[in-house]
Length: 557
Image (cartoon, rainbow, N blue to C red; front, side, top):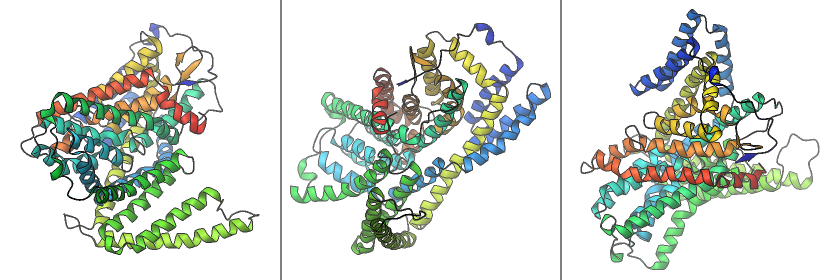
């Protein structure tokens, strides 16, 4: 959690700094109005931008804000357009949607269900493990919850599982994609924290600032994500032991109709592809071989090749060749500098460059074959798989970036009223110092998660509070770690998918659940898992090394 070499601690602020002025009132009304309109169901991006423009006009007429302040808005949009980190968002979305369409989850659930189903609570364990694997390869909450709900919920109900326990397990495992990297939430949160970290250092008079990247956040979130999976499994084991009627076992003779060796081979074959994809994407990021954007491109290509193989496994040679060439190119990039824009290139490197070009042709052939197969394959709605994936990717990515643009205008107007100063004064005057400020921010984010989407919280709350928190000391001479703060926020945001009444995972599951499952069953089922996530926050608070040790070991920070 610590950062070394902090500047002198800032003096304590007095209560007189929080005077009730017209700009302060407008700041409060701006925030409350935006939340109220969002709760009323108005589109997020247009609400944030529209209400910001209205209040900017009111402030200009009242003489408390200069409209020239808004000239920075085009620069912010341009910065968003040229931000290479954010390019990872549509690529990760494409990877996740393509994997969801390629039926990877169905095979994983079937195989894991056969492996654990004979144990009390075995199907619930399977759901959690498959959810973890999908989280590390897709990161799309909606796709995971819907797929799990369609495939495993009917089986669990047929086997007399408790409706609330089954619904809670499925909804909770679907949210693991928000904290286990590669996660879109972590990409967006890392981008916001990077800017906030720089602002915090500038405010402290540090004009050669350190940086925090999405790689750091991915590394920091890995162990807490696995911790959360372990806590889910412990809860399910406890339920199976204490309430066996809630999670009965399935007779073995109904599960495995093949020899153990044949089943082991099939299980290894099913697990091999997603694990290889996880290692390629996440391993390249954590090892520093690739940025999140480059790794997202690797994941998108890998998901496309996998989908092509799943569609026509009888003609897998072009896909296997493309995959092998793809792996060969990755290996060459590890051992050779393949850049050709150099004056001196050794003969060995030239051989590697030529080999990489040849392998790239093989990759291109495999990708073309896979794309043609996904284009020809029709989904349940009669639309080709590729068209469906492209449409979903465009819709989700457009939503993210339009919200980001609207939130940028909101933050600009909020700061134009001096809102960041008022929030800073308020946090510094809370009893308990840094501990009180962190608790207040975490509580506000948790409560907002009952009503707002994680995107709204990331783009509205984080830019306001993060620069302030990152200037605070957690101990004498130790400043708050941005990685630890980001992971804490990530786990907190994960609860927004499960907390009634507007938890998105609840809506997704409600949409695919049988009529026998009531909304009350879903709400009751997620309550223990929300409590588990809050316990994980407490564990992270007590043991910050869970978030900071891996980035420190990998990157030295």
